[in-house]
Image (cartoon, rainbow, N blue to C red; front, side):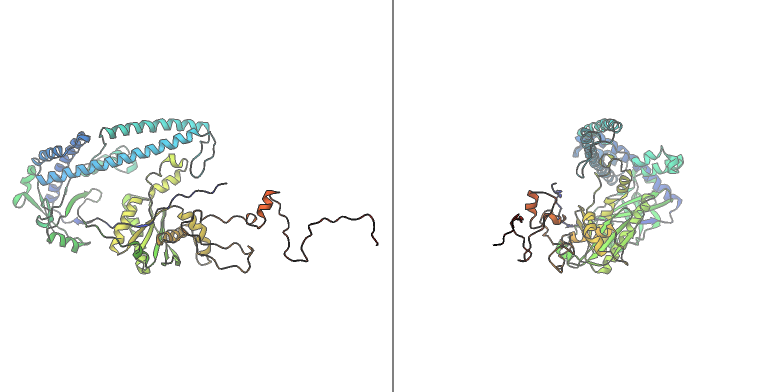
Length: 546
């Protein structure tokens, strides 16, 4: 039987730092007139954004700078040049995002079609391997999968035609909220509550920053003292309560997080973008400020390895972390940081943030400079064509927010002065459990497969093989105490394989395999007295007396 061919393992790398910052504060003590003006502006600009998105989708692949300028010019008369610029930019960003999602959907459909065609080509009941699935279990399942194949092929043809024609399907306000309209009982909403949420999501109250302008934004301006003023669109200019068609809110903004950094930017008239939005469930208005950061220069990989590493294994309900020194040796006991991914999106996001900050605070106490984590991506691994009947497993990997987790971890680690080292996730759980789970288990230390995977991740980030170092020699040369572990070089293929059986390593194995396989003859002794003669003993019938 041939050995299993391992796929190439990518080298670890230091993840890039965050490229932007966003902070939020609540608009408190708003008057009735403030609430009325914000609703009117949001509804008016939302209608303009809806018309602009419709025009952009109609342009399709025929879009150009001239059509963009024409759309912006048409919006300027109903708002202002700056509001028109913010609307058209948001429209292009939304269209481009939908275009990328369309490509990802096509790739997912192609992967599903390939898997179905392969499994349908196999005989019914054919067993699969780790690399390729086998046939289906019964004729009934085979028939149902043929229908599933026709459905996916039809969807794929339609998606490809839309992409070739430049057609994208965009729902302003969100497709998920739109579909909630048909399941109000399950969402525990009345029609009036859903309608208010739907209309609010379609509002537009966002302004891009401008460097060199007063306080970094001429449309939504926030002074260092926290005063918020809005440039009203032309049809709503009669609601202004100050000069130049501006409306000043009664609420004062006081950012508790990153206030000094924000104040430095607006004092220097550097660009800051603002967005005002209403939380319908709570009935509260919020203002979000965001700006871009220059590219953060990451530290070299060798510098990140100098003080050791924290290896973190990501699971469905917890982080399994282990500290390693710079030589790859585990230090102390395993640590687990639990979270709950059930409930609403806000609750899940809060759970992830709480667990991440616990990991980072522990890493700071350990004195390391970096945290190692797997470069996970379940984008193409969630389909039922990939995992078949494993519905619970599909739900499990769908709950792990890999994209949000990586983004949160990188940005939060940068604030703590830590770097993130991403490693290839191949075989980390398998090899970690094989080489580290049993040796580190003790009566007072419970080692799980996930804890061992954290060690494997950390060693890979440090540049060490996952396998342990060479054990000291045994008390004799035979394998009576078990074979010794030999440290193979990291470039040797099959270094993680098991050692051949004893019968295949004996000094006379070749002679025995050529004759009778499976029976082992007694080896010749090295002493003279116990040496066997090559002749055969035959009894003579006559007694020799002479």
